[in-house]
Image (cartoon, rainbow, N blue to C red; front, side, top):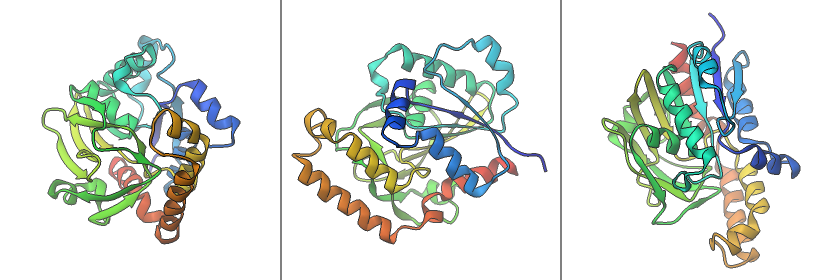
Length: 264
């Protein structure tokens, strides 16, 4: 059986990626590579950053060689309409014409939904800072291959302030919690079949804690998500409690199922 060809799209700007590296935090692409290799060490993985100006005429023929595309997270907000965001939406539309299987994670789901005609806005019921609690599968989620062997209700690493509010035509709603109605989606656009999750099955809780510590000043002073560092410390302690009871295979099972789906 041939090795799978996977394209990873890095959602963050190069500057944000460097910010992570400078404080010793793996980039989202590095986290994806590590998590994917846990299930399959023989993947042929290429990486692209659509924030950069791309010659789509040159890239498009190569897109058809990929068995699957994974679009990762980002600190961007899609409604800000910057040139980097417009480039990402345009590239996602190009992928819809050429790549048959897409896994869109967090920011990636928001880009995919926007490119397919849906809508994303700032969350109205709160945010997820390192963890999303009590995500539940809908009936469509229970029947979807992405959630094979997944618990019907689960906690998971997550970090988002925005949410999908309008899903693309024909999309199946797979999962939800009290913060975000749309935690999981399955839809088609062009030649692509897209699975989207708002959370991060590929990122460890330990990395989420590092991101919280890295962004603590913004979380207090700009995002107003915490009153002070004591509140942040208490929140981190809650995540550490989840580490003690969480299981790696259960956390990442969506990645396993998606890889199995594109392999078969």
